[in-house]
Length: 120
Image (cartoon, rainbow, N blue to C red):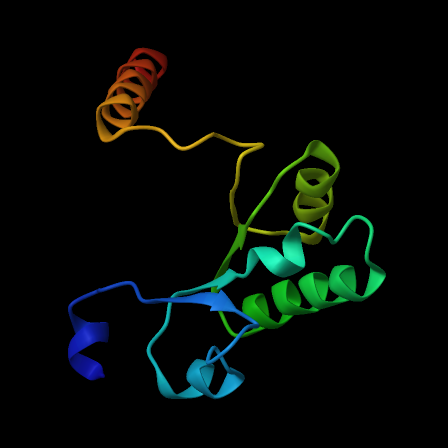
C-alpha cells in the first residue's frame, strides 16, 4: 500500500454504497476519492432517505480527507443540492452527455488556450 501512496497514484472507490463497496475499504485501502453511486444521486431530490445518504456520505468522505464524486447528475435541482452539500466533482448527463475522445481532446485543448489567455 505504501508503494501506491509514494507513487502518488490516486485510487477511487467506484459505485460506493452498493454491492461490495463497503466502509472497510476506506480504512484498508489508500484511496483518494469516493464515487457515490448514481442510484442514490438520481433520486435524491425526491427521496429524502437518499438525500440523507448523499449528504452524510459527503460529510464522512470530507472528514476522512477524501474527495467525493457524484455519479448520475441528471438535472439542475440535483446539481444544486450537491453543490450546497459540498460535493467536489459531479458527472452525469446534466453536466455533459457522453462524448468521443476526440471531442474531449478538443474541449480540453480549448480550455488550456483560454486559461493561458486569461493568465497572460
